Image (cartoon, rainbow, N blue to C red; front, side):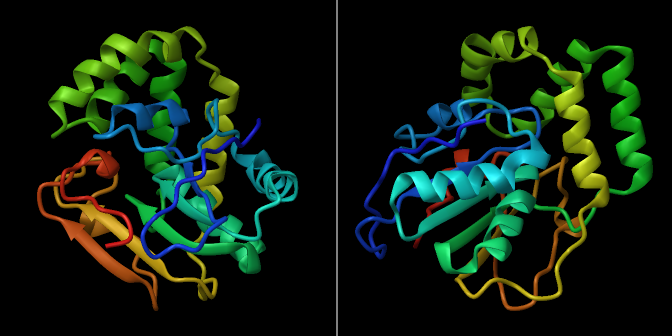
Length: 224
């Protein structure tokens, strides 16, 4: 997996600090093209393979020549972004964690595995639909532009490794030294607000009409 990026100068960020987006389970960075203005953040070209992300992030840092990056993680990508920031605390300028659950209970992981094993394409199509609840226009574009390609390249082993990671992930006691903001959507059915990861020392923002794909929400504004 290659972590590529497009540098963007954000208000409040220093020159040379690009924004890197780590997408959720079952998605690639291409989902950013559905956001208003086509968010010009860096993102993986393929689905995240959870066990390789820390090494890939380290390689990205070394090859990019950038002293620091801003990390935006969504769902599974939020846990991975937090792990990256904890492993490389001097290289992350800020951390934005979107729709991150405190944990994924074993019974839910088992249910996902069963659905994925029984009818993988139907299961993933329904999962994608739930991720886009509240974002009808973007969902229509996703159906037209991305879902078919994702289903055609479905990799159950890679998705399984993502589930392994979610099942074993534990909320850290301490945070990295950079600013941390946790975003949640009140209407999120994948990562409900009641099951959000409350991190001591992090700023918390709840979007009242937000669904799971928070970065598509008109109320989502990075670095406000």
